[in-house]
Structures are given as C-alpha cells and as structure tokens.
Image 1 (cartoon, rainbow, N blue to C red):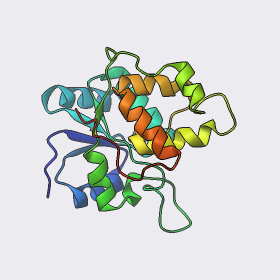
Image 2: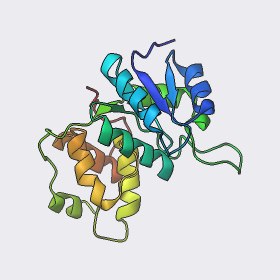
Image 3: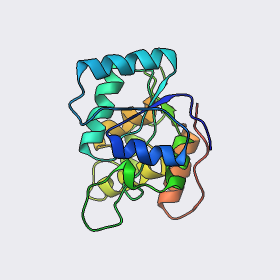
Image 4: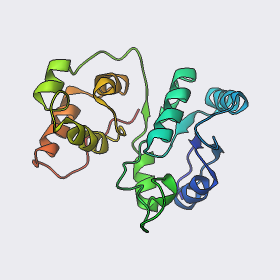
Length: 194
C-alpha cells in the first residue's frame, strides 16, 4: 500500500476510513465547513512539518473548506475528486470522498496540485470565452468537464482563470483538455504533479 508523506485534510471520519483503505496516510478531520481556529492552527503546523493535502468533498462545503485553508495556508497541496467518483451508490446520501472507489482515491492522490500566486497567466480570458468556458449557456457544463479532466474540481466562471493560473496549467494541458472536451481523446491528461 502506497504511503503518503503529507497529512490529508478531510471533512470527517468516514472520509478517513475510506482513504485508509486505499493508501497508507494520516488524516486530520475538519468536522464540517466551520473550521475552528484550533483545527486551522493544527493544519498550519502540519503544513510546516510534513505538508498537507486538502482532499475535501466536491460540493459547496468542500470548496468552502478548501478556500479557507488555501487563504490561510497557501503552501497546502490540493487533490480534487470529481462529482461522478464521489456519488453514492444508493439513491440517498450526499457527494463525498467516502463514496469514491479505492482506485479513484489513488488516482486523485497521484494528481496533486500546489497553488502558487507566482505562476504566470498562460490562458487569457479571451481564450476561455473562445473555448465556450465562460459567457454562454453551455459554459457551466464545459467547466465541469474541464475541471474533472484536469483534476481541478468545479469552478465558476470567475474562479476558472485564477485556478488555471494558480495550479500552473500549461497551454499544452489546457489545449489537451479542450481536445478531450470535443471528443478527440480519452486518455488521462499530461501529468502536472509538482
């Protein structure tokens, strides 16, 4: 079983249990989207000593947790599980890491990003519009598919350009993703792990 050096930041006990079936990793649980100052301080301390990977659910609460941590701990790494992989088998239940297959968890942890404010802007707003990722009725679905393909999670129109820049997505990776969206390829994207 692969050992993960960094501590994984997850939302709850069920996430911890599922992740530990897939990989050998330590976790810290936020216990919801209202992260206490004490938990945030602990995450910060772990980021300085071992590193942390934020691995939250692909929903509003998970994105809120991710933003809080990214704002306070910019060196945190991020792993994104797409909504399809996090959907429960049964009709009831909400999206969550605890519903992901072991293979999906391993794959996501192989595609980890570190945000960086210093990355240059490679993809312009005009290119996003030309790719129908912002500014039209099909944009939301295309952003969802792009986020899944590049393992960025879902982003709205305002967040897309920033997230592409912050995670260092190259023009080549972006164009590869667009080709995939148009049905041109079915393989995984070129690695962008740091």
